[in-house]
Length: 291
Ligand code: 8Y4
Image (cartoon, rainbow, N blue to C red; front, side):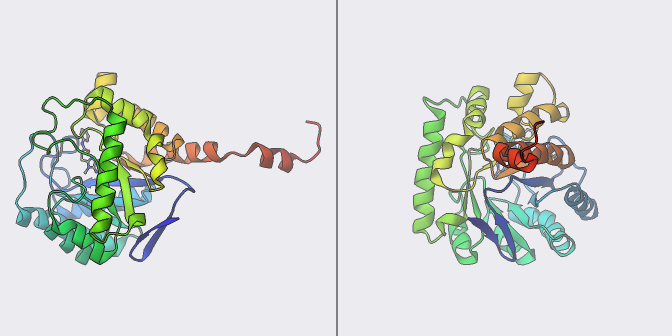
């Protein structure tokens, strides 16, 4: 099985792909304002590709709890020039992080080839139609509530069961809207309406979502559940993010969405080699030697 992203292909089951985060927002919590200048954002995108990013996820609206919504015209102003220039200059697919179909459509026209909609097509009824029409992959991310309300006392009886039920409902609705099932990417939505314990369970049990036979994406990078375990601020969560990514890769995650591409890709390459290390092939390569 492979994901088809326009002119790009990502074969599945061979390795984990690294999606580099490119925030084009003035208030982005961990790299606030650094990349509002399109030239600097593009430079960071090029740098992430040089560091091993397999995709670049471009977003122009913060989804931090309580963040102000961004008008569509402002979101377009932020992301479209960056996507257009990056799409020309790199040979990896660009992902558009938006729940607005107008932004997603303009992003696709500018060269984006994956729809990263944190609402799984629920906030804008045009989004499933855009995914169906373009045939591009669509992320089906779980979120309890909305970005504004999601951290107001979230609670789960069985978080894995609830997220799995959400996947069932969204796969059904999206395929009925004409989106190809095999173009859906499942994501438990770490940090979106979850307590620390819920985030830890979802990541620790990620492999329980493999029964859908669909690609799995996880985005643990620098998130507050790591801060809760470590007691560190966002810029001091690299080791926690590495541990989270290793846990995801071991369970067969297909994509990981991260800020620190160079370090993450190094760890990812070692874990991908370890999980595929074949004792039979190793013995055969050694032949009949007694040593
Ligand atoms: C520290 C660092 C604290 C980052 C919070 C955050 C995901 C996503 C985001 C995700 C997918 C974020 C756009 C939130 N998270 N898309 N987007 N999956 N598919 N917060 O987990 O990074 S933004």
